[in-house]
Length: 211
Length: 164
Image (cartoon, rainbow over all chains, first blue to last red; front, top):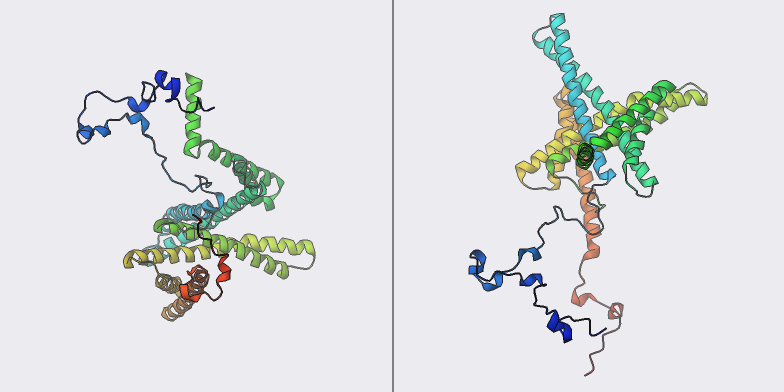
C-alpha cells in the first residue's frame, strides 16, 4: 500500500519522522566530544550502527569452515607416522642403552648397536601407527562418501571401531572383538574431548549441572 | 575449495610423508597380494591366506620406505625454497637427486652417484610433464586478438544501435 511504504511521508511523517528519536542514527551527543569529531561534525555517530565483530576467517560461498576428511587425511597419516617414529625411536634408544650397558659394549660397537636398536624400534612403531592411520582415514572417507557427503561423529566412531576390528581380524574372534572395542573407545574419547568445541560443550554441561 | 592445495612449507613435510606412506602401503599391498597369492601352495583358501600374510608382513615396510623417501624429499625441497627464496622445478629436481643420493649412502660413493642420477632424472621427467600440462591447459584461456577472427558470425548477431 502506498501510504505505508514511506513512514516519513503523509500523516506518519508528522507522528513518526524518520529523523525522530527512534532512529539510531540520531543518537548523537549534543556537544562535540573531541577525538575524531574534531575533524568533522559528520564523525559524531552512534557506534552501534557499526558491525562490531568480524568473522575470524573468510571462506568462499558454500564452502564449509571445517576441513574435509580427505584434506586432513594425509597430514594425519604423516603426523602419526612421525610421532610413532619418535616414540619407537625413544623406546629403542632406552632399551639399547640398557642392553649395551649390560653387555659391556663401548665405543664404535656401542654406537652401532644403539643406532640399530633405535632404527628398528622406530621404524616398526612408525609403520604400525601409519597403517592404523591409513585404515582409519580410508574408512572414514568411505563412510563420508557412502552417506552422501554427510559428516558427523558417527563417521569417526564407525571408522575407529572398524579399524580396530580389521587390524586384529587375523588374530582370532576374541582379539578381533577386543580390537574393535579399543577402537570404539579411542574414537569415542576423541569425539568427546578431542576438539575445542566438544571440550567447551562438556564444560558448559558441567557448569549447568553444578549450578 | 575442493581442489588440492599444498600446505605452506613446514607442514608440507608432514603432508608429503603421509601421502608417500599411503601410496607405499596401497601400492605395496596390491603388489604383495598378487605375489603372495602366486607364491602360496595350491588351493584357493591357502592362496588367499598366503596373500594376506604377505600383505601383513611386507606392505608396512614398503610404506615406511616410501614415507622416508617422501619425508626426506620434502625436507630438502623446503630447505631449497627457503635458501633460494623462489619456487621452481629446479628445487624438485635437485631434491630428487639429493634424496636418491642420501638414501643410498650405506652402499658407497658409486651407488650414491647412480641413485642420485636416477632420482634427478625421474623428478625432471615428472616436472617436465607437469610444465607441459600447464602450458597445454593454459592455451584455452588465451584472449582472441582483434585481427585473428576469420568468421565474426561466431560471436553472435551484432547489437542494434539504440533507437531515439
